[in-house]
Length: 92
Image (cartoon, rainbow, N blue to C red; front, side):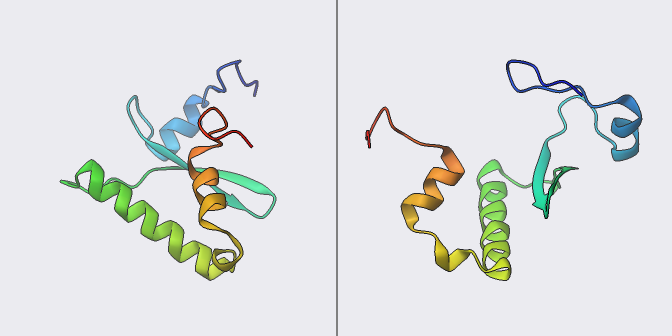
């Protein structure tokens, strides 16, 4: 599978059908050892966008504690991981 200059790939139809992925489906990625796993994002009916973000952050925190990397990161490192570097605002 080739990645475009915009970082896009085409998900094969057989995979989309198996996972129930249709246009507009949100997908998530997780790291499992040496693999990156893509899963359709769980959608809770009636959940607001803000509640969804809060749920995802709680899930991330639980995973960080479970895997032991929560105590190894500073707040700045966590923010950079989640939003990318802001070198244009605060050059290093």
